[in-house]
Image (cartoon, helix red, strand yellow):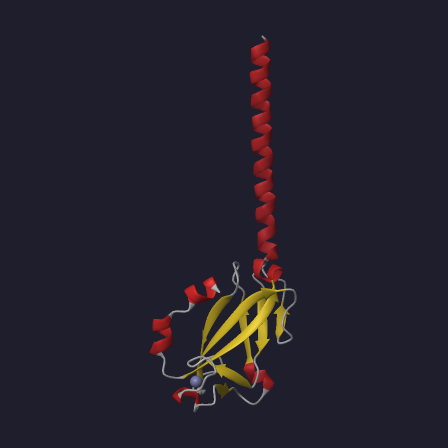
Length: 161
Ligand SMILES: [Zn+2]
């Protein structure tokens, strides 16, 4: 909850007069570490983010707002942040295009055992870029350890002389 609270920018939220909805999804923690690109199919009816579903003028007291009819038009793509913590809230402007009733989507992403059924993983994330960095880091480590051992051997040898 702490991360969520920090990321919700109240000023930015208030500035937009359009419809705001909230959606929650779960992804495996490893996806986040790999910064995987995900595709989320949002439900037709989404919780109103202005009143948290309690009912307000923005949602005609229903607590919910409706997205486009077609499933394909309710699909959004986001790249997962590397640090998920207890969960993060990502703000998407005009998730259903310009002119739609809903102008903001607050997508809450939490770590879990498995991905929500509405979530689809696209590609393999940034693993290809991470791997050479790790190999490089290990090479440096080997050199450092090697140098330390050489220095130690030299020092020990010096004592014996
Ligand atoms: Zn509302």
